[in-house]
Amino acid sequence: MELHSFDYLFQEEYQGKNTDLTLFKEENWLGQSIVGYLVEPKTENWQISLVFVSNETPLKFMIRKLENSPSLAKAQQYKVLSEKTAKILKNSYQRLLN
Image 1: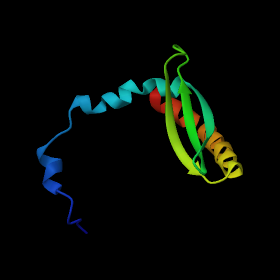
Image 2 (image 1 turned 60 degrees about the vertical axis):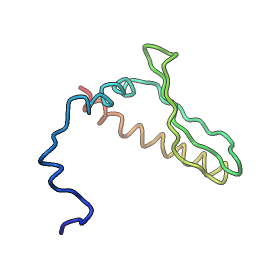
Image 3 (image 1 turned 135 degrees about the vertical axis):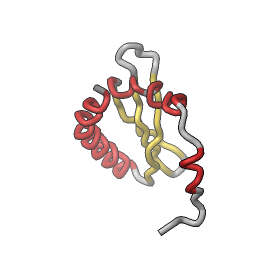
């Protein structure tokens, strides 16, 4: 089955460049960072975000917005589930980095 909107020749004619992978290199520090969760009120919702803080440079941090939730209880449940998932995936991610 072929997708009508996908340009199949694009894959063959244009190869990626090494600079395309700089995003992975720049964000490599996230694997060794301290991860926290931020649940903050927004208009009629609760914003759930991940906060990454570098072990080596504490002033280097990144906030990634995850989800909006209509209730605080659901936001806190989402936080707990995300923490459990992060613990499970941490070992796999560490192996990938090494």
